[in-house]
Length: 259
View 1 (cartoon, rainbow, N blue to C red):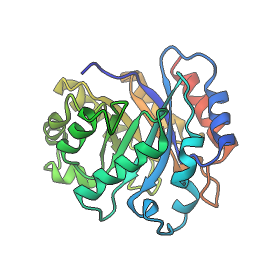
View 2 (view 1 turned 90 degrees about the horizontal axis):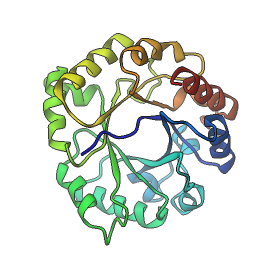
View 3 (view 1 turned 30 degrees about the horizontal axis):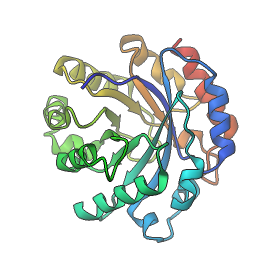
View 4 (view 1 turned 180 degrees about the vertical axis):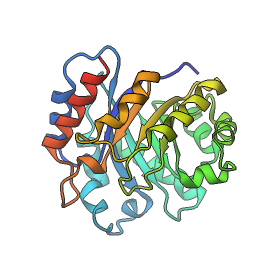
């Protein structure tokens, strides 16, 4: 599989005005990056179970998803799916349901789970009657995933080999969903191990990145300019929803840094 185009990512969209603001901030033509628009879904939300705060402010209803997703060549539209306590069979049914409801503007899934079964990704890639557009996948590397790989980045790269030809991106995120700031030194260790591994998955870094913490990306982009980035919590207002001023400033800042 060829390496994927790097992106500037932002997750938590629930309203068209947020998406328009993100696209406006990204600009009409960026030769080096795509804009990844992330939409949260969980096994609980798909079952109609109310979500706790702030996730209730960041997760659109499934029936609104197709109306939100733009078909725009500048974008990757990705559903960030969290399995919770769902079984593997339930996860597959959830992904089928999302693909069916989201329509042809959905580009893929970020799987917010620890080391998903590669057979799941293979099914989604091969079953075009279920997934008309072969979805792109992001594998999330968290503290738990690192621990299950023996606590070393070499171990992580060994585990990632199982996703070659199936997944497209590997996300380094040690924030635990709590907005813990990215540690550039730790991220650089991951990226160097990734480079030395020869894996084709495009690396992504995340963790507390927002308009006031963009400096955390400078040493990373200086050494690895093709690294993708993802943002969420640091672009939210106090009620948990995406802030248009914050997301605009963050996207414009990274666009400026990656020209």
